[in-house]
Length: 295
Image (cartoon, rainbow, N blue to C red; front, side):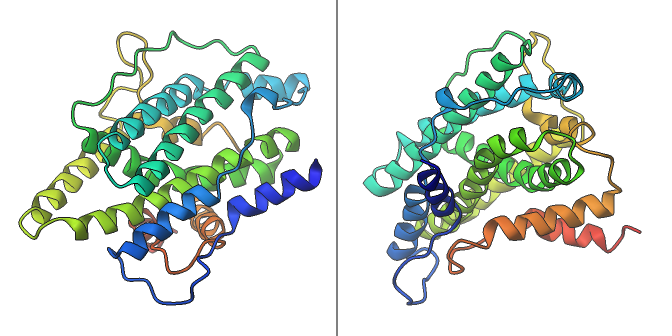
């Protein structure tokens, strides 16, 4: 049983296409590669059978006092419906299978979080409905680029919590597959975006680029704190997910040290995947630029 778990974990973190030939972004082979990446690295763990570790009172208090659980559960609920809605618009059978897998994994993240709050007696606000987006492509882009931002910082914060011993090692290891899955998701997304742009006729490419710019503007607007963290009806907004959790999951780090750790962890989590696949680079590049201005 232990060997099976270790094999699944290794397979989730390491994948390469067997052909050594170069891959042109936007090609049919590029499409096959990033879809097979997601499908073949799926980890079949089941949230219902996770053995949540018993926590000592101080560790339990640290977990239950985190102000992120409503936001985390609802963010995954929204992500799942957005990805699944977009998948229903896709005709290519391999790409649709990969998108359905992505949506299933987002839904599983929500189940993992729900099981955690149930195990440790954490009270959540009533969940809102998760209606499908009116524009499926917009919902998919918002989800993908949002995960590119949040995952980059989550990688560093998770490592900081692990190094500091802020959470018990058993609990950290329980969450490890979820964090790595987010790395797979953003790798899949950025390769899809590069492939999709090249499938568009020339006259639609500027419109798509404008749409992507609008998505980034929307996400930045949220994350600088202008958007509300909690809506009037009690629904958690994923606007400040990273910011809400950043001060609560580890010993405080100077901004420069935190950004450097995020860059290190981002590189480590992407290292096991075929180097011919494109990497998420917007947030890491901005973070590297920020390092030059931080003391």
